[in-house]
Amino acid sequence: MKIALIGYGKMGQAIEAIALDRGHEVVLKVNIENVEDNTIEKIQQADVAIEFTGPESAFDNIIRCIDAGVPVVSGSTGWLSRYEEAKEYCTRNNSALLYASNFSVGVNIFFAINKQLAALMAPHPGYNVWMKEIHHTEKKDAPSGTAITLAEQVIERNDHKKQWVNHESRQPEDLVILSERVDPAPGTHVITYTSPIDDIEIRHTAHNRKGFATGAVLAAEFLKGKKGVYGMSDVLGI
Image 1 (cartoon, one colour):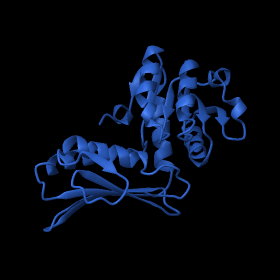
Image 2 (cartoon, one colour; image 1 turned 30 degrees about the vertical axis):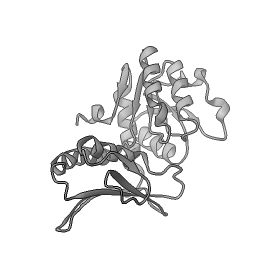
Image 3 (tube, rainbow, N blue to C red; image 1 turned 180 degrees about the horizontal axis):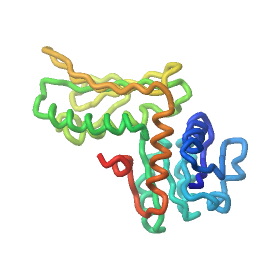
Image 4 (tube, rainbow, N blue to C red; image 1 turned 90 degrees about the vertical axis):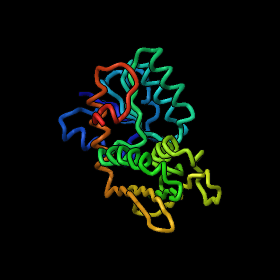
């Protein structure tokens, strides 16, 4: 499979290593030093594009891949206010898009556990739920996309929480997400249900970027030749 890497920072380099190890070919690598190569013509050399950039460029990169007729896997965060627009554009142009806030197999299993736990805890208002996420200082957005996904899963299943906030709050309807930026920290997410009697806590801690990179390549393998909009639950069947 021929892969275009739109975004060749630390994550892009980790994805490249996994892709080559799995027998794929990287035909395009775009970073801040060669943005002139980020063209429809060069993207069309690939079977699938993998896009890991920043909030300011992700949407335009995804649209460019769709215009090139190349399925695109995106792991960029901080741009989701335009996600529905990207989905509609993908469908209208008969292309393929797979977005995930986190490609790690472990995190996606964690998502499934979080949904189940949230449903089990919903009938018990004596427990207050809050979250913490920790990442490296180079991460630009807060809270993380993974934390937002986890929070939205809880809110969907818990009538007592109406919205998430990224600061301390005493409002019972707020789901608090506390963000820390320390090095080195590939990513830790903790969901805690606390009561005067006891606490229940689930945690996922990444040790390096390999899990994210492996999942992104698995997603690209899944998306090759497909049409439509997908997520990691489709890749993993969970």
